[in-house]
Image (cartoon, rainbow, N blue to C red):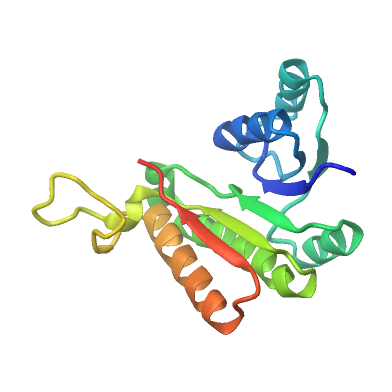
Amino acid sequence: MSAQKILVTGGTGYIGSHTVVELISAGYEPIIVDNLSNSSSKILVQIAEITGVKPAFFNLDLCDEQAVKDFFAAHAIQNIIHFAAYKAVGESVEKPLAYYQNNLVGLINVLSMLEKHDVRNFVFSSSCTVYGEPKGEKEVSESTPKQAPESPYGFTNWMGEQIITDFHKSSAKSKLMNLRYF
């Protein structure tokens, strides 16, 4: 029996590459899609040095709808961990349209493939920025109400979570999860 395949978008980034190492260690077969805008292909060599496995890698821009369709048509993907996004708060203030374009269009293109290709599980890498500045709370938990984020980066996570929620309501076939990092 072959290992279960997991698509890791943004898999050469910091969190993505560490996740790939852990997936390999746990017996999964990660497939990395990354456009290398925030990382380097040298990470693939480092992953191979650590794990003894060179994961499959595809240099692909998730904003390219046809490239995403072609990728999913060629690969049997059943699970996705989505890390592919621009991630700098300060830069998002300087380049808001680039953040909205990259982070939201890429997410939508990937989500549009879930039903068509029977993807079972989808994990979205979000952020604690969706809480904005919680009023009067010293600790934040999942039950803390979301507030207006203070940057375009935060809004892309806030909107990404909303897109995923709305998508799930319309199609409950896949299990969808948002991870908020602190």
